[in-house]
Length: 413
Image (cartoon, rainbow, N blue to C red; front, side, top):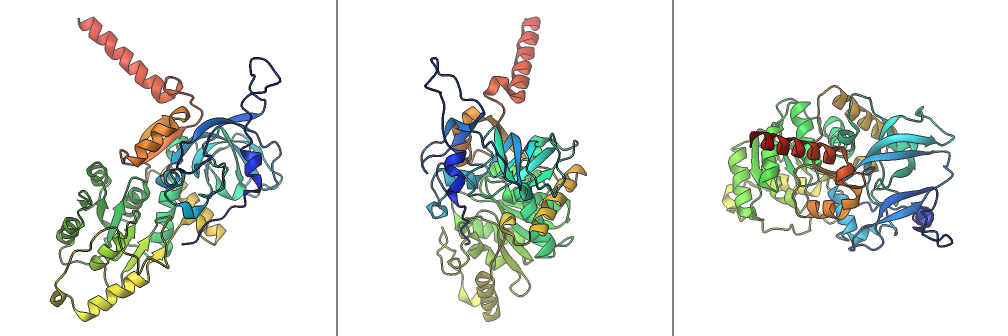
């Protein structure tokens, strides 16, 4: 695994907290400040704080008023300290996938941005200047304009999952119509995005493996050919269910967005000669994977049923697992093109993002718990400009519907 590193030179400047100006009675809020969800210690709750504004932009930076920020499972794992090896700089503002509008632009403007442009942003997982803040400062290479036809809330959940899947299918496994592909889907939305793209754009035959029954229902709606659910980590049963779903066929690709060593299990169902095992788990460790014990006991098989060439082929598959992460892709032009193509596909109605639930920024901890408890079937979104439910568009709509319902009930009575 390539550990992402970000020099924490600007951390103190970004997260210099000054909630009240003690010189003034009554505690006036400081001028030029933003509300942000700040992580000060991994494993501890994030705290809403007032963060001092970065006044002067560097030449390659853009200031974005954040409307919506996707809360991905990768963000949650960093917040909860599940992957201490990432060693994120503290204090830390999470959120590496968000949308909004441009309010300021640095001197260098190679992508011809204008103030007021609707944009989507994807930055580094370990960048301390994430999207859970009312205004974020980001590199211009990580910003794309969004057409009026695409809602900003939906755009905030598309870049990472769909962009990484597009990179993989288009450039690295040559996915074609009717190709058989296995895709694992967890609570993060990465697998769901890959299923959406594989079915809707590539017209591939998808057998999906989901970690919850609720995810399975959604995946069926997305057009998966067959769906297998994980049952309380019963991997012997999972193996048999995948076996039943596959029949005597072998997949061209196994695309894993869950981790847990599932590719060790899926290797049995992939073409040992021409197939590929692909991981898009951000925490995948290529060096350790071949010898690393998976988080389950692999079902025992009768050795007689496995031909020597099959065993050799599977060993090679496991040894040569390929890992892709769009943000880490070395070619910047390709990186930008994948997101541009994702935006275009959405504007043409070829793909769609799925939002499981929207939380106001004030309820960020509830959103984190929601992801941890696997209650989400797609992406969880944070409405950054919304202080609480009553002031959010969704909250107002629900309140209006509730009021209408009460009035109708009264009229019937």
